[in-house]
Length: 64
Image 1 (cartoon, rainbow, N blue to C red):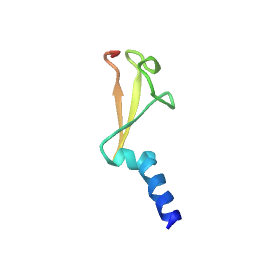
Image 2: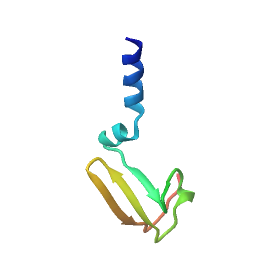
Image 3: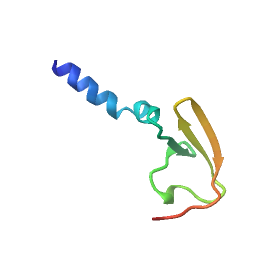
Image 4: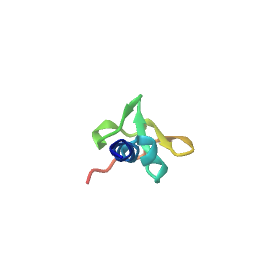
């Protein structure tokens, strides 16, 4: 029972599980983008989504 609970928690936190819920994993030069300072205008970034990868060019960066 305890293993089942831990397995469920681990699966819920898995990056693949998060992406399957509609989120994207964003990379710039092989590094995960965590903040706006991690990207610049004209960077080519990778958006990893549930069924593949999208390559996009940054046109604008806005901070909240």
